[in-house]
Image 1 (cartoon, rainbow, N blue to C red):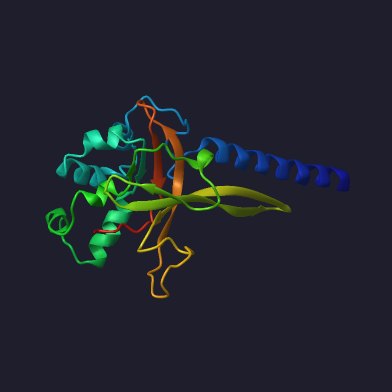
Image 2: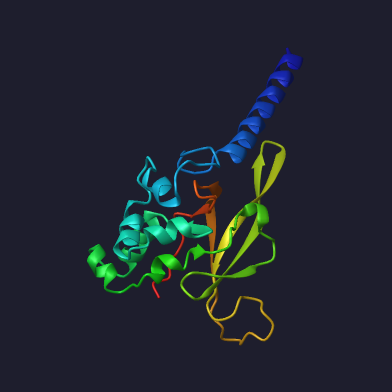
Length: 211
């Protein structure tokens, strides 16, 4: 009987690890969305088709600034979710999108558009600076994360978008009063759109710079 219980427990652990590994390899959205990295949609249509409507407000902003083609033509789009838009509107006490539009420009979206194709696969653990379509610079890196399951440790990497405020943090010669950069995790990486571009989805908690 003891042998049976030991065998049963071991089997459960193996099964759990297998499920977790499969999820880490195949689930691309924390919301349980599409699990295939290759999509037959453009970036815009992929976000529009999200069954949980996580990008409806973001796409209204894209439409307002006539950026649909830009979103589809960019090599990479780090897409924020509606949660991030809602958070900034709440923080600034904006009651409507019209109120938001009065205080933002197209850079609200174009700061997340890049000519380069960027994903977890080609990211480094050292932050690399990229020019974005807002005529500013941002950086991208991957950072290790750890999950503990039973007696096992699973290490994986998280893609991070870095909004540089002044100098990249840790840069030689940066002034002592240089503001801290915003480092935002991605919850989804490496979606390959119909046009071959890369779509990475930022965390629901990601902050969006309005200027």
